[in-house]
Length: 204
Image (cartoon, rainbow, N blue to C red; front, side):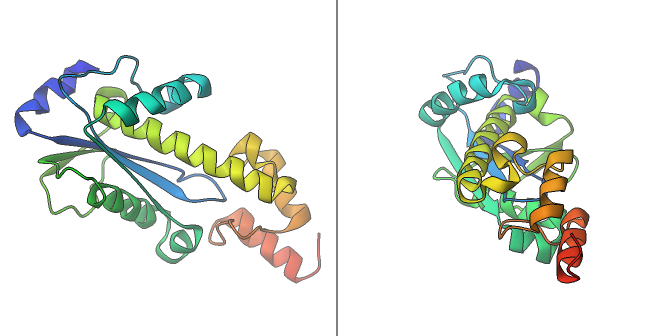
């Protein structure tokens, strides 16, 4: 994980940015921006998808405590429906960087697209596997979003959010068919649209 980080140390404070939640049918897309302390490297950082839930939960407080700055932001299902998921993801990342308590000198973003920053920035393909600060951001965003979906599960237990976190699993799609969308479902996503149409017509 040191390979690319060393290349950017001369830029000053570098913020790594990532988002979680483009694929689900429900819930927010959550973004995080993290500025790590070069003098306090955190071991075990990697793409959040490659870590167990237990390991992510263990790293979360370490990142929050040892990082120079952490900012968490999101875009709501309503914003996703209005803007589309790509633009809503960009908005969430822009909000995360704007919310940092420490102004970064450079921003590194996971992926191949850059949000609109008023700062020097670079998109890094597979950045969550190649840059520690982006990995840290992916872990923060993943843990926060998963916790949001656990809260949603308590409010809407019929959908099974605890198990699938809003992703379009067979079980989730079937629950949508039976119950119709919840207030946190994304109406612009096809399975949700189809569920809305079926329930409007009285066909379940």
